[in-house]
Amino acid sequence: MRAPIALPGALLVAAIALPAAAQQVAVRPTRDAAPPSSSERTIADEVIRLTKAQWTAEMAKDLQAATRNLAPDYTEFNGDYATRLEGKDLAVKIEDASFKDSGKLLVGEMVNPLVQVYGNTAILTYNYVGLAQDKDGKNTPTRAKSTRVYVRQGNDWMLVHANFAPDPLPTP
Image (cartoon, rainbow, N blue to C red):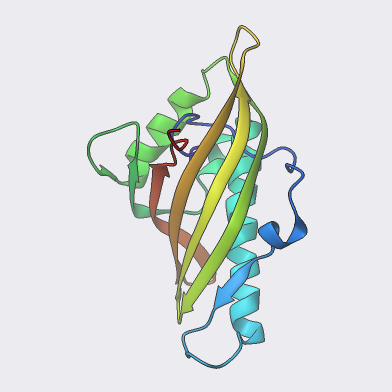
């Protein structure tokens, strides 16, 4: 939904130059020893595509596209609020308000993605890395640990829960 932690609103525009292995999607099948099926790979590709499409819509400040795949009973934890946010209506209000921020995201990327598929449920976990610019032109790195839970409802994968947790820099 929003950029994890520091940037509610806009996300993905361009990729950060990272080793190709860091950006490849891992799919963990429900069967322990078997390699992921083509169906599981297809689901993984779809939930990642949906996530990146949401980021692109947020960059364009397109509220309808950015919230298209939120389930009505969507819930979210993030570092900006001390409580669980409940319902698509609230998420849409917060997203709309975040579009008024004068800052912008210069670059954002999903690294170390893992998709776990359990029938009609797909859990996407990843690290988010990016660079934001405030209204005065100051650049700030953004980092987060993110989890998104998608459930197939009819023909669509809907985001039912997300957790965007801070990923603080290590202290020396």
